[in-house]
Image 1: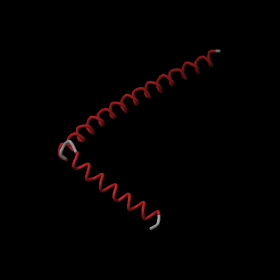
Image 2 (image 1 turned 120 degrees about the vertical axis):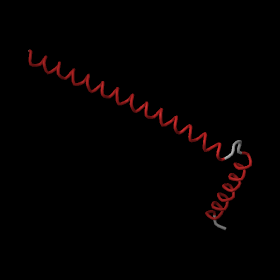
Image 3 (image 1 turned 180 degrees about the vertical axis):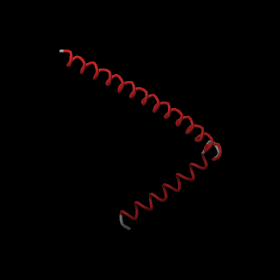
Image 4 (image 1 turned 90 degrees about the horizontal axis):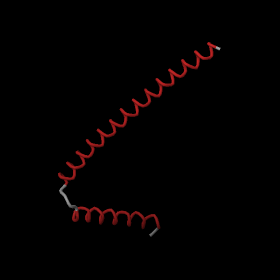
Length: 80
């Protein structure tokens, strides 16, 4: 038996035992777990949207400040 065959055999047995142990020791049913994941995903999506909105606002403020500073600098150059 080659080392590659033994790797796949070990992987298969490990995955199978892990799957069985997960089913036996799972604290909640599949429906409960999916419901919890769904709620968490909704919360994460809201938080991500809030972060994106905040970043857009900060970027827009920075751009506006840059435009204003550029205008002041240009005006200073022409005044001299």
